[in-house]
Image (cartoon, rainbow, N blue to C red; front, side):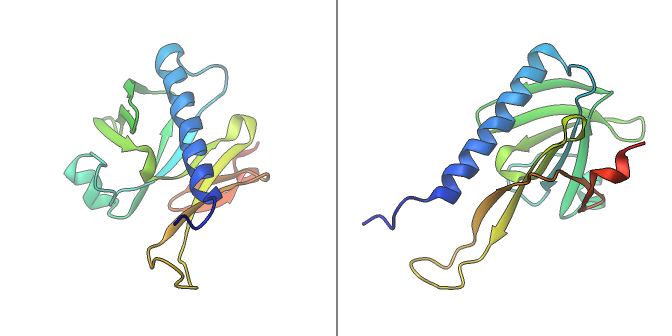
Length: 154
């Protein structure tokens, strides 16, 4: 029997769908105006694909920036592939949508943050559930932490 409506999971799916749609538009049309993205992801996700040296350098999470230089952006149902420049070295990546913990577009003060909460009540299952959080006050990831966008403003 169903426990009820799982609003957290439904929001999770909707917000990942929003990210997918934005990335599909960027793949077709490029980045308009000043739009750019800070995307933090869990590098331990089983479907993340990145160079071994990057994984060694960022064993738990990495924040990528999609702004001035990126190519080969291809979006599928579960995530996106993109080639980014790491110290003048182009590297292909595959980012599953489920690996993303934050997605920020500071040009329009938009941010999504996905947080994991454990079920302390031990009701029907002991697994962690992801509960997405939409922040009205935007936050931007930097070096594995979330900071105020005021630090990026001139």
